[in-house]
Image 1 (tube, each protein chain N blue to C red):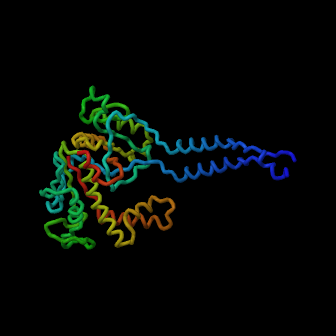
Image 2: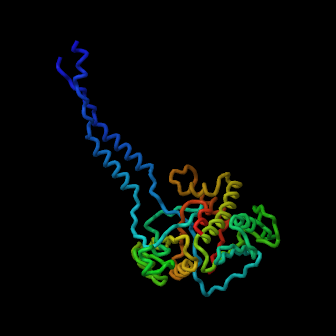
Image 3: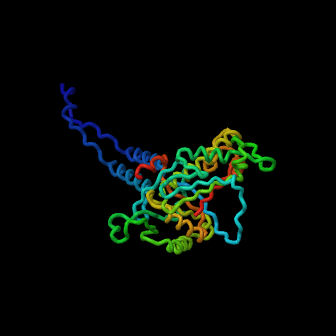
Length: 162
Length: 198
């Protein structure tokens, strides 16, 4: 009779947790790879407009970022509500772009300089006046390749907030 | 009989499964890249006199401070802009040397001679909102892309966008040099002549 009882007496074996570290490492690696590090802290509102004729902007190391937008709330007492330029981590004026471009160019190898692209990350509520000034400044510096960074989407999304 | 615990599940291969998943995600995830409209600014060239361009070869788009569009001196809705731009670029009203053999437009002598001569001039005021400006840029680029796509379909049975993707695709099977030539031919037939005036 004991033949039939023997299984009941055994307890459920504990599930091995030996592989738990593997799973955790897997997730870790996954997030490490998929996360894009933000190298600048935004001090401005930066809601990009949408467009559908977009091209990809790869070769991240060959891109200079110029941010434009209204200062975020905690900076509004100091800088007001008018759209401002942000270069790296600081608010800047149009005249600072010259030095910024020079610094970016100096940090790249000489043969890569003509390939540098300036990405204009401009808030959708900003005015074209400031953007025009930036463009003029870039022309003076001969940084002619620009990219209006946008989100992918239909242009009808651009109207809603107006 | 001796009591025997149920055999433990062998977890030795768990790590393999984990790595398999890890590699799967590594291969399939694309890191988010920025997208945008690529444009080229005109260089500052003070010595050069501006070339004389016939008025009929210029398509003026003005965005005012209230985000209204004035196209060729007429008020226009944003949704009609793409069509108007295509009509202008593809008009092909030129004769003789300026004739355009691949244009399918109305051949209106009052509009552009051929796509190579046709210039879109985009003006904006300081108060124009950036999002409107991008919308207009997008529509104008769409007009160019539409014409290029059409021409590519005609010549090679494949859209221009696909051709460009194939050039960037490392796994593309076929003659890349030839493909590049074809892309350049279409770019030459419908050049992007979009001037942004301050």
